[in-house]
Amino acid sequence: STDTRAKLIEDTGEDISSLQYALEGEDLELCKFIFAQIHNNPKLKTKLLNATTPKNQNNFHFACRGGSVQCLQLLLEKCETQKQRDLLFTADNDGSFPCYEAVLKGKPECVEFVISKMTEKQKTDFFNAAGKDPIAHFLRSHERNTDDDARTLRTLVINVAKD
Image (cartoon, rainbow, N blue to C red):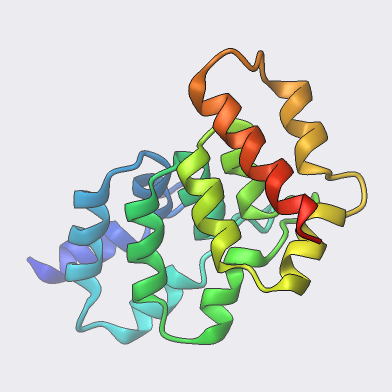
């Protein structure tokens, strides 16, 4: 039944929601299914869109970690308020922005997409966050031997140079 599906979507029994699980897994079809199931349940939709983990990671952290631009676009489309959309630029308890997840995973399309959505102030915050330089993180965490790694680094360098 619809109520049973909504309950399963709402309560996974874990620290992450079913939506976050689908976003991290780059499962666009599951994301669409979840949004279809909660379409007529505004309270649950709001709860899922505002969901954070104990470390204050939001849906955008999971979507960027997965690296699917299509999942990111869907998530942005489903956000109902500017506050929900602004979570794309909100750091977790460790000071990591969602885009850092895509940087660390070497997901260039995702990095490019998120940076394209940033205002100049958000870019400044992203590139100048204390102890969270995305270029330094990238260089420490990657062998830099794939085309995606090179493209991710190129995207970061080009955008930081625009400041």
